[in-house]
Length: 367
Image (cartoon, rainbow, N blue to C red; front, side, top):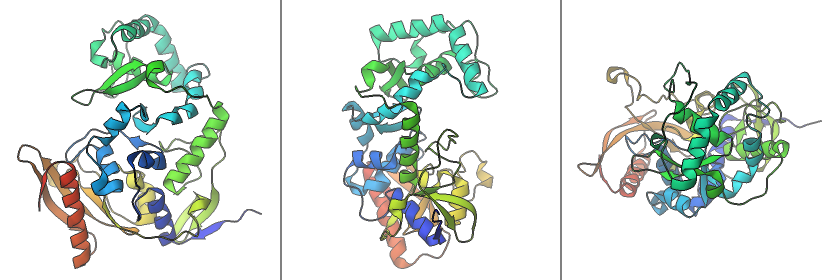
C-alpha cells in the first residue's frame, strides 16, 4: 500500500522554498540555478528589472552579475524555448515533441494551428530561406506574405508573421538565437542554435520532464505535471502522494525533499517567481495575500505597480514597492509593506537585500 505523507503547512512551505533554491546556503553558480529551477520564465517588464534577472539575483545575491543569462546564452550553455530559458542539453527532452508537433494533434486548437501553418506554407518557406542567408533576424524583418490571416480575440489577431514564427519554433524549425536592443527575439534556424544531442522518445521525455518539474517545485497538485502548469494526461503524476494539514485535496511531493533539514534566509522575489506564480498554491500553502497590480488603476493598488514579495525563512511576510529610476541612477523604494510587524533584524535583512539588488542593477537604493 502506498504511503500518503502527512505534511504540516510549515513542512510544505519549507519543501517549496528548498526546491526553489531560496533556502541557505545559496547556489554557487548561475548554470546550477537554471538547472535546479528547471527553466527561467522570460518576461521583460522592467519596472525594477526583467523577471529573469530578479529570479537569478534572488538565488545568487551579490554573486550575480546583471546580464548573466545573456552570457550563458552567448556561450551556448542555455537555450530559450517557448519563453523559457533552460540548460542547452535539456533540449533532448523536447526534440521528439518538436518533431511531432502538427503531425498528431492532441487538441482541437493544435489541429487548427497545424492547418493554418500549412495554408501559409509559402510564407513559412520564405522565412526559412531568409534565415538561412541573413540570420539572426527579428520577426519584424520578414514580409507578411501569409495567404490566410491569423484570427484571434487577443493581441495576436492578424499578427501573421509573429504567430507563424511561434508555430515554427514549436515545429523545431527555428529557435531564439538572442535578444535585440529592445529585448525582441532574434531568430535563426534551430539546427544552428540547439546543440547536438540525442532525442529522448516522447513518452519517456514527458515522464522525465514531469519529474523535473516536481523536483523544481517540491510539491504540486496531481493534475499539474510541468513547470508551465500544463496537465499531461499521458503521464502518471510524479513523486509520492501527500496531504497538507488544513489544506483540502491531494498533493504530490518530491520524496527527496522529505526529512531534510531547513535553514531559511531573507529574499526579495520577482512577482513572477515560480514560488508564487501559482497564486492558488501560494494562498493554500503560504496564506499570502498578493496580486501583481500593474494592470490595475493606480487608485486601486494596495502594494504598488510592481511590488516584490518578501520571503523570510519559510514565510512570505510583505512586499517591497520599488521602481528603478535609471535616469537618476536610483532604485526608489516607495514603501515596504509589512504583512506582520517586522523585527529590527528582519527590517535590516530586507534593507540589505534591497541594497544588494540596487548594486546588481548598477543603481543606488533610495529608501
